[in-house]
Length: 429
Ligand SMILES: [Zn+2]
Image 1 (cartoon, protein in one colour):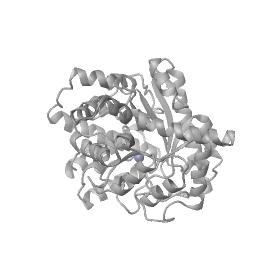
Image 2: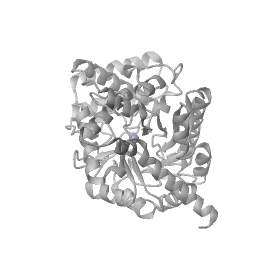
Image 3: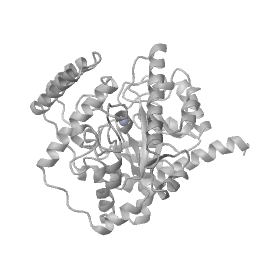
Image 4: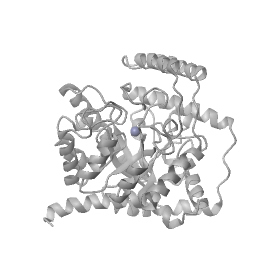
C-alpha cells in the first residue's frame, strides 16, 4: 500500500498518515484516472500466442497484493470482475485472464500513534484484516487456497486454485507486543515488514527522518523472532540502514516485496546498486514495484500538495457518508485536473525490472507490483497486463527457466530457507 504518488507521502520528511478507508478512496481515484489516461493512449501491442502459453504455464506470484483492503467493502466479491475505475486491480476473473496464480495478500496497517491505545487499535484492525483474508479463502475454497509452506504453492496450482500467502505490511500492530508475531504466524502470515511510511517502535522508514538509525533494540528482537518463526523479512518501506542491519542480523535472506531501483529513479522507496548486490550476495530477492511515483521523477508541486493535504484532512475527519465521499472524489478529480502529474508507462516499469536483473541477477529478482496499493502504469493498469512482463522478458532474451525463477521460484526459495531455519531450531541442528 502506498497511497497516491504526489501526495508528498513518498518523499523524506513526515508523510501524511492516512486512514485506511481514505487510502482506499485515493487509490480508487488514482486508478480511475489512470484508466482514463490509458484509454486515451494507444492500446499496448498484442502478446504472441507462444508468450501467452509460456506465461500461463508459470507459477506466477506477486509478493505485494493490497487486495484485502477491498474485502470489507460492502457488496465487493473477489469472484466478480471489477474495473480499475471501480477501485480494483485484482480479482479472480482478472487473475485468470492475467495468468496470476497467486501472491502475498497484505495485512496493511497505516502507521498511527505509538501509544498503548494506538498499538491495540492497530493490533485489532490487523487481526480483523487477517480474518477477512481467511474468510475470503473459506468462502471461495473452489477458487482459492491458503498456502502455509513454499511447497504448497505448486500443489495448489496443480489443483487449479489460486495461491493465497498472507503477509504483513507495517508491524505497527505488533510493536507493543512481539509475542503477537506467533499469533499472526499461526494465522498464516509468512512474510513480514517492520515499517511503513513513518518510523515506528521497530525501525526507521525510508520516508521519514532517522530516529533509530536503522532498527531499534525492539526491532532487532523482531528480526530474531521472525527467524525463529520461519517468517521471511521484508525491507520494502524500511530505510537503507534497516535493510543493511536486517541483512546482517537475519539468519535467512531478506526480500524487498515491492521496491524499485535508485539507479533508474532516485527515490527513497528504491534501492541503490550496492545494496542490490549485497541483497543478491546474501540470497535475497527484490520484487519490482509498478508505482508510477517511484518509477519516474515527480516534479515538486507545492500547490498540488497543499490542496491534497487539505482534502486529506477532511477525508480523515471521521466516518464519511456516501454523499461526502462522492464530494471528496469530485474534489480530488478537480485537483488532478488542475495539477496533473506525469504517469509512468510499462516501459518505465521494465527499465527497473531489467536493471534489477542486470545488477542482482536472475536468481534475485521478482515481481511485486503493488496492485490495489497504488501500483499500475500506462500499459499495465491491472493484473491483466502481467503477460506483457513475460513477453518483454522473453524479448529481452530471458528463458522460460529464468521466468519461472522471476515469477515465483526466487521468493519460494527464500521462504524455504526461512522454513528450514525454523525447522533447524526444532531439531537442534
Ligand atoms: Zn507499500
